[in-house]
Length: 352
Image (tube, rainbow, N blue to C red; front, top):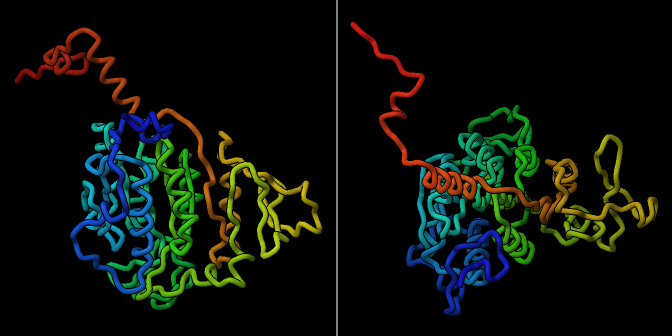
């Protein structure tokens, strides 16, 4: 039986198992070495609890990481994995996904690893639409190297590398992914187990590049960065949760909503002032990424509003499927003549 029988196009061709699995089956024998209180523990637990629902054989799941605290992830998963080099996990995972369609390939990375030295690899993986899943842990700081500012740190952030405050304008990872025309983009909080699991489920079902940004707390070098989104009185007023096919509405009593504004943008308004008919109905399947991008711009660096859920989920041919098809077409053509290839039209013989 294959995953396509389960109606999961993103896992088509990956062998499944008939043996019931539990979260403990995905826990390795390695001691988990993160600082006490690190958000990585929550994400690890959520992933280990979620994977059994896919029904895949563990030997057909691979986690590839780069460098950073989050990149220890493969050690703690009882699957195949690779702790690769700084920023290059998407490139390595691309080769793996292309060569081995029988694998479910996951990349675990951080805001520094993915958006700084690895930025080029990230955007090209997304635009190519390689069939792999990227979990981007965003704690707005460099944790492993002891507290330097990162590409997502807020302006004015005082760190060891910016003693007078950061001058950099930060990335919005979701906006960046949508600008690269990623076919699946989502965001979740490490503290929202239910929301995180739902976004992970949809990402796994998606065939193509799926990026999930996860807000994750670093208790040592950036403690409390997202606490305001966890406070009961504040969370309802700030968090805008997306659900496909439903009007975008939030607040303790649903008193706020998202409406269209000028020049294709979106804004927050009071429902009592604009009326329910004015609310935007979320459509994650729009081919044009402009709408999803406008949604991503509602999320502000000061967290006055933060959009979570699935921003975009569309179908497009994947790089790895096309590459394998191209190889098969080449095999079906006339036998390759290596000598003719090496001595083609663009070669010359130099006579001394």
